[in-house]
Length: 147
Image 1 (cartoon, rainbow, N blue to C red):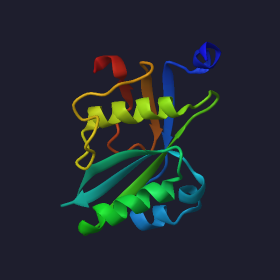
Image 2: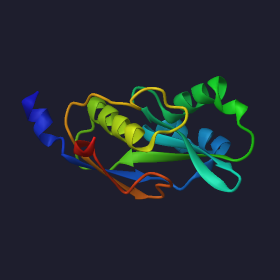
Image 3: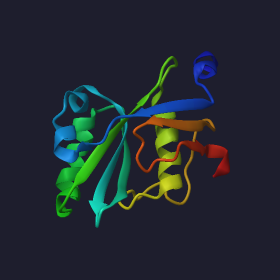
Image 4: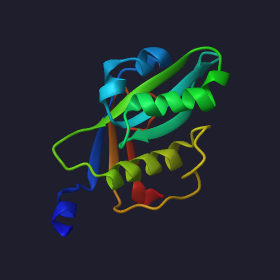
């Protein structure tokens, strides 16, 4: 176990996709084949609002996004967008690393529909999270040691 942990970096980079309308993202090849992080946002009066930050690790993006659509997203009218975030390689991406990054981003950004990790969170290792690409409202750098 210690050997695997040594390969997990203290700095991770998430590359965010171009925003897709929710349904285009939901039915994209990436949704069925991909895993990582995602954001759901809506445009309200011309301004983007972050609704949710989530992870897909044991399931794919499609499964997770479909669940949100059934539970609460269908209540929003107007434009909704999804961005997919992939961990840049090379390193071993464990479930705990994905959870750590998701938790830090939720605490930092306080999305409307996230319920957990909004006041505090637990983690396996402190990390510096760098977001690149089309990150939308996600900050470029989030330092877990700031929390």
